[in-house]
Image (tube, rainbow, N blue to C red):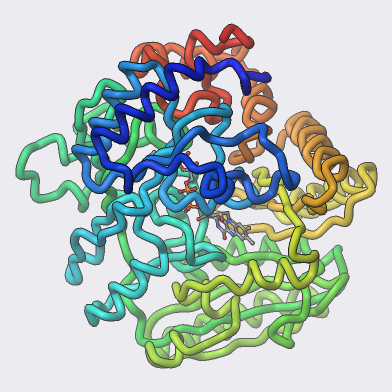
Length: 502
Ligand SMILES: Cc1cc2nc3c(=O)[nH]c(=O)nc-3n(C[C@H](O)[C@H](O)[C@H](O)COP(=O)(O)OP(=O)(O)OC[C@H]3O[C@@H](n4cnc5c(N)ncnc54)[C@H](O)[C@@H]3O)c2cc1C
């Protein structure tokens, strides 16, 4: 769908004037130079296909409501992000060129932390690094869960169903209680927050019914202005463990063994299975080998027993080496520079981005092909073979990180290209889209994608003659009749933009 030049520029200009009057010059960015920073960092250099017309930075919830009012008045689209670090999925760039980008970078306060009940309430601009610093400085007995990179926003990552690697690494399920500005400007609290003065808004995840929280994940139905996030109690001991082997065949046995260890409650985080990784910490197998990392948290005697069980189960699979690194106190954990140990210990950093640049060059971009399959060893191995075939077909090198979730395996493989080369970048996106279709045909749905592939991914959800799309469109028409909220996100378009109707 090419909508890029069709927005009414005079309406957008009028909206920018109104926004500047309402929020002040300091909160509206319009200079072409500054807007460059708000493009997709992984599109080709000089691409102007997904550039916004302005960036607005609300400072309080009332500002967000005012922005929404103005967007409705002038019928101009807003594209919301927390920090806009959604690298590999579009960064802060809007799906529709000329949209006004709503940046939450100035609404970045940790509003509350409850040490007893282990949760925080954050504004949408709070970075993982901010939350970590806040917890450390406040002396709380709490760990955040963080993704590989610590510069993203907790709320944005969570709403995009992001992943971390501690016991609380399933970020969508750590959300408990949100405040949302709807497209008509109304303020809603989800779940138990529907009761004014509720004592359990951030303690009970369900609702009287229906549960509205899901409506605001990976959608364009509202703007989240607050979120409750469950945190992990700091353990007495933390062990960052790993296992390595070279033979593909052992993947099946290792995955099955890990699944059973997870079902037994021995491993409680989300292990990551990696292929062909660089030997950053000196313990990985290097190119051509496999490594899985896992973590154990808790009391020392329990950890020792758990580690023995893990080692026994994994070495039974075949020629597998198992190792560990222990952290007994918070200072040790926070001082580590080893990426695996940081992310499994809830310590934010940017080393994976640096490593990516070292390996692929400063101007390399990438897309992440993030699809799900069953947490079954034979199937994980089959999905690896399928990806190798697909990557070979497109002349791309295959590498992967496979996150072991409760019953599914999230298989993420990058498509890397040089963003200085427009043709190479376009070829990367085209190969990615083709593989999305091939994976869907094999029963592996992509769950999260970059702005340019949102329609292709949505197209794959075809059950009931695309019943999900029709429901999404009915909701969109009802909740956001003027189509001001992130049009095109997840392939959900407002009526006037559907099928190129704009
Ligand atoms: C090397 C590398 C490693 C990575 N590793 C991981 C990883 O381990 N785990 C992982 O999950 N991701 C990973 N990513 C992807 C990405 O960098 C992170 O998910 C990052 O946290 C997303 O950026 P953000 O948090 O600033 O989200 P944002 O860009 O702020 O938000 C993401 C999306 O959420 C929606 N959104 C944000 N805020 C709101 C709001 N207030 N209301 C409504 N909708 C909103 C918007 O649609 C937005 O586009 C990685 C990327 C790279 C390049």
